Image (cartoon, rainbow, N blue to C red; front, side):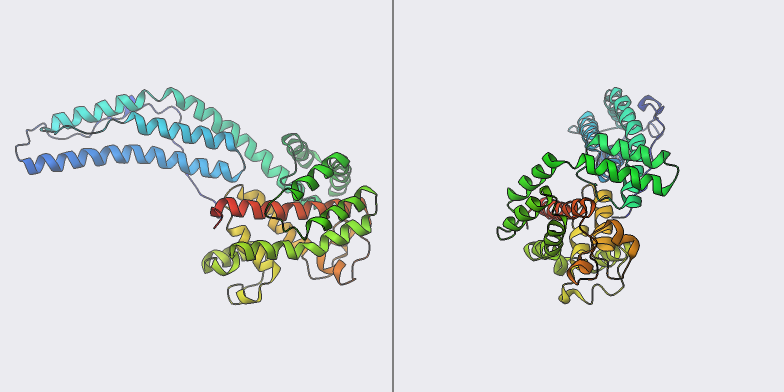
Amino acid sequence: MTGTKVYIPESGLRMSEIEPLELPNSTVKSSGNITGLKALSERMLDIQSDSLKSTQLRLAKIFESYHIPDAVKTMTNFTESVKLAIPKIDVPIGTIAAMQDLQRTAAVALQASMPDISKVASTISASMMRFQGVSSFLKCCEATTWPLFFIASDEVERDLAHYMDTSSSDLDLAKTIDEYAIDYLDQDRVINILNEWLTDALVSSDKKPLFECAIKHHLNEDYYASTSILMCLVEGLIEDCDSEFNALASCDEEGLEHIAKHLGLNDGIVGRRKKGYAKDQLAAITYGVDSAIYYWEASAKYITNVTLANKPNEALYASNPLRNKICHGSQVNYGTVIHSLKAILVVDLLIRLSRSFKNNSGGE
């Protein structure tokens, strides 16, 4: 889940400017040498192809991490066109000159696909601009402790990014986003969220009546009931996913330590595997997801450091439901629409996380 640095060639580079390898123009007489030259030529073309393919795929992976599917599709399509543009070597090469000619032919064939590079460059440019928007959106969610990561529409993402970039103070930002989120998560949207939970095959049937009960209380503005019911289900949802896919036990040690550290967990997560703590299970599940990872990383941080926070924190109590504190009777101020909506969002994130983990693991 670490970032990947890539080198992006200047957009002005043309394939016609790539000179063939300068070799002596001599005749190759030995059949063994012919075979060697053929292998060398094939390798040269492979390197030429693989370099472009590798760059495109690595860029596509980064764009996918930022939840930008259009860029991923464009990159993948361009990669395939590049691969098809390079001719296969199916005739013997008897001279160095013939090999050079083949390389020129390959370069010309590859150049034919270069008009697509303008589309790729345009996509990259638009994606880079969106990177800034995504970054500001995620920062806004973090700063205001609103886990809207996957429920937000594109318009909402843009709005929150704008508020983050233009707000004059943290208090003004928090007040603005509170009002915005309450308006966005209206009755119809909450009912749609419930319907998705009820039709999700990964959600255990014994929890679905509790979901219905909690949402009914929320719609009736009985927020103490809705918040407490949903908070009591949080660890069970994490445990269900871990049990279904054996995430914590099967996660490799290096990866588990890395994601645990990234989420701010204490050292020693590998050693305490068998204890099955919810935070450790969440870390393993998050590590097993490889799409939209920046969104999942932000989601996991919220659940780990806010929802499952252990230490008393009046600032978090004010506008967030803390599972441990509510269930242990330490937090008693959760009878507000904000607390209830955030409880709904947390449950929704966990259900989405389980689904995403299954998709990335092939259901194994």
